[in-house]
Image (cartoon, rainbow, N blue to C red; front, side):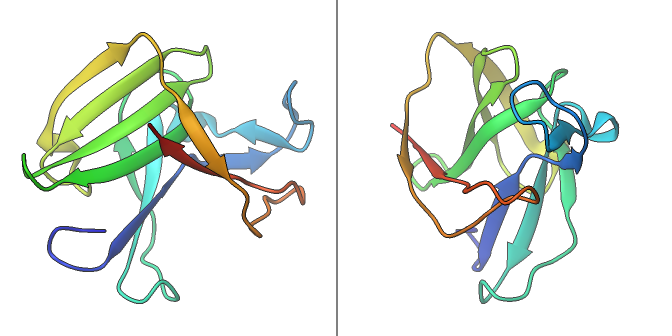
Amino acid sequence: YLKDGGYAVMSQHLDMGNDQKNPNLQYDEDHKGMVAVYTTDDLMHYSRARFIKLGDNFIKNATCEYDTAAGNYVIHWEDVDGRFYKTTMKDVLDEDSIIETKERNVLCFDSKETDITDAGGVSMPFWIPR
């Protein structure tokens, strides 16, 4: 959720193409190191994507939570080389509000099955950092 109301949904930006792990998808070179953030008040109608640069490599498994005690958003993410990061920022919609990005030794996720599928028809799990 957003601190001022509404919700934000975060994803990596993929294009149809050729990828070793999934032959139906490839990462979008124009958005390397970025996550797409969509906002909504009702979970039915969404804003256009805002792209936030978090790193230099392609990003996967990004999740975001609001730390009410600190008043910051915390983004846990992994790059395609298997490195894990934690980015702290004041405003999840403003790249200039990034406070810090730290590499982490490990990032554990629990997954929940969803009815959401990607463009290739593959089921997309929902990842929750622990």
